[in-house]
Image 1 (tube, rainbow, N blue to C red):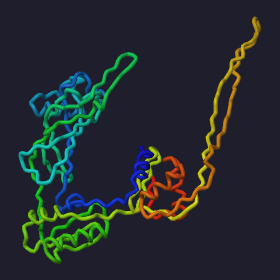
Image 2: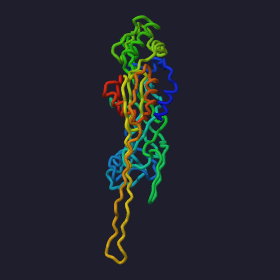
Image 3: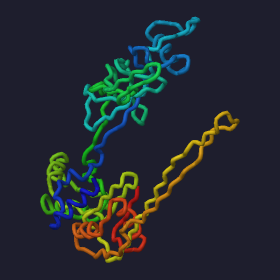
Image 4: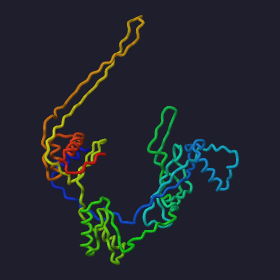
Length: 364
């Protein structure tokens, strides 16, 4: 896939123009954020695939406590619970901004014990708490796992993860998170990719289109917008639809595991000479059995037979990679040297060490 990417860039060497984007697509508004919720509960109705109560003590204690609250007292009696149709689970959800009481949100349910499959289970009432310890939603409903598992005496098969499920609109919002827009007459915009150039272009667009001296850059990530008595929602609506040309850093990202290389449009390489040699070593094992003679007291022996072939390839020539003004010319030059994705990774690392790569190199 990487080779195809570079080939495409070579066939289309025309200079690329930076994308024009809306401000609301590259910034977050301060104070408008999601909140993570978590809870602990029980899933019932499993077909024998739940927790083993003799192993998962917390599941047994939770089940006993729930039954006690419902008027079934078994704690003081010598009763050995044997059910495998109950599972302890962790319930997680994301509370979006501006959620109001009575609204519904999706929840994810994951097994906390040794349950094998949550398919067909029902989550009982589970309070969901935020980081402040307050309950903001309550979850309950039937799980959908989109998975299955089956096992026999000698084989088993499974698809997806049967110990994690999803309940669409499974939680009811009980408490609202207050959002105060424009408190103190200011709104802060936060760039998702901090950059002084991009921040300055946003400020220029706001000051030119809405009002002079309305916005200022506080740091590479933060832009302060003075409302001057304007309605915050209307102001954010107007700012969000303004368009700018964001600046991009010169960076090369390399994933050695998959052989993927991603280059930004501003990447430049100074003129360098490159020689890349390919060494391939092939080892073949063909062991042979040596049998003793008839009616002898000898034993069968395995004789090792190893064949080793070494091939240095034919790419030992020295090539010149010339400095180019665009990413297309850079890719074209690397392709002209006959480099594959794996070769490019090692060569880019060597070029960076030499100081000829005018970009950040990030290896993952």
